[in-house]
Amino acid sequence: PAQVTGLWDEVLASYDDLVYIPMSSGLSGSCQTARLLAEDYEGRVHVVDNHRISVTMRQSVVEAISLSESGMPAADIRKRLEEEGPYSSIYIMVDTLKYLKKGGRITPMAAAIGNLLKIKPVLQIRGEKLDAFAKARTVRQAGNIMLEAVRKDAELLSRTGDGSDVQIDASYTPGPGIENWLGDIMSEFPGAEIYHAPLSLSVSCHIGPGALAVTATHKI
Image (cartoon, rainbow, N blue to C red; front, side, top):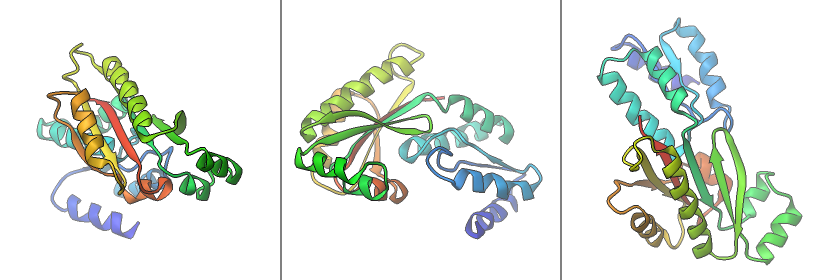
């Protein structure tokens, strides 16, 4: 909290107000903490809870900057980002069940059976929940499942009909196959400007190394 409020004080010394975008309230307590801290700033700090995380949250930051530069007030930016929040999806392949077991998301028995069968779970984040989406036996199969799912989501999210208003992003934790994964996404979406970055530590510590992810987000 001291680091957050220190940053806020520094920004508010030069600007009238501030838009702050924390991790989704459904995945972290940081959003509620930020809201409590914002109460001391007499309406100058606008905390956005648009259920985003990782590269999809980065997209929200990019859009908040653009909206601010266009002259939109901070309160309206918060409202707009939260309205657009649900129009995004994330698919993550987990290479090991060890860290899901440690975090209590699956039982030790399920982890043991899954590791024995070499299952590669595909998880989905849509809105504020992390849910099981599919099970695969190989990284290649999991990748194909995710690409098919995100392609369908991109079609549903597009309001122009041609996908030009949908941002495709990729992410991962350290492990083999990252370059191949990025190549597969670029082949699936030729011509798209795909941003990619490692998953943040706040996410990767729960899913472990070797994870691969792809996202589709409607662009404001």
